[in-house]
Amino acid sequence: MSVGIDGYNVEMIKEVLPHRYPFLLVDRILGVKDGPIPGSREGRTVTAVKCITINEPIFQGHFPERAIFPGVLIVEAMAQAGALAFFQPNDDAFEIMIASISGAKFRRPVVPGDRVELIVTVEKDRGKMIVLDGQALVDGKKVAEAKVMAYVSLSN
Image (cartoon, rainbow, N blue to C red; front, side, top):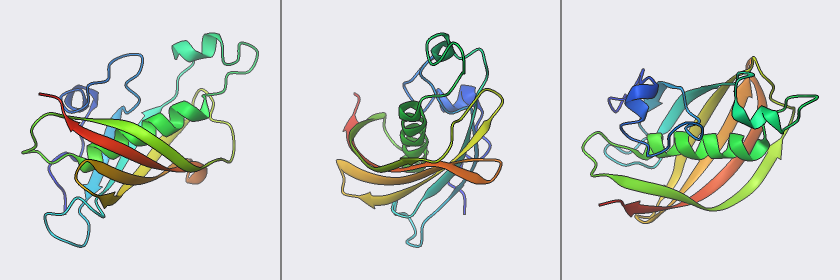
């Protein structure tokens, strides 16, 4: 079952996330699935996309001779996607900030032309702290994974 944000494009995502260019790292939401407990955020999974282009400002310095999208930005993209998994359409404004990252693994470089599919599940919801389980795939192959613990605060 969807929570009403399936198919969100970048303009709609900007209504939920506070990030802006060049740090908004989610281009589209392909789908959201609720977890096993109705109304619970736990188990909710988002599938989102980040398209990597040579125009990314990071490629001016990482690396000029061989453009590689930084792993830390892939983890940030997972966290942003996780915030979208956490979001419910009736929510008041909130912010999610990374508190810790564990189990991060990077399996192959992500380069311009790659379409990164982000699959992130809200593993735990403890009110002000959540745990996100994320993976990033390119052409169906896992390129990165990480668990992100994040702090949730109301922004108003």
